[in-house]
Length: 127
Image (cartoon, rainbow, N blue to C red; front, side, top):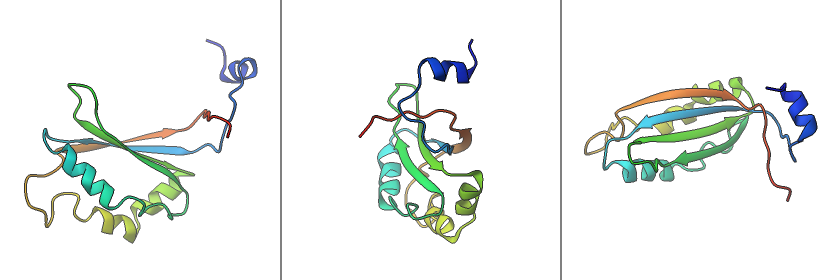
């Protein structure tokens, strides 16, 4: 396989943006609880938008028959920006009810795993 810089010279991406870090919280959601977790995230949508170093958020719903994990994808300028948010009062407030505290019914998740990535290449349409 050719080195990355050689590949980019031959087939340059239209845009290589600011490199970032991506954190994905893979949440195991029991059958029938998907709508509830979506509502929980919808209620606090936008609360992280003003955090220093925050670049974006997406909640991904599973579409495969055997997949039950929702992926909470966030992009940050640096590891430090993500860590600062996780240790912030805003994070604590937003996640206070995430484990079912003060909520009726079964828990909306049965486990989670945090995945960490560094963006190496990025391409977006011109516009």
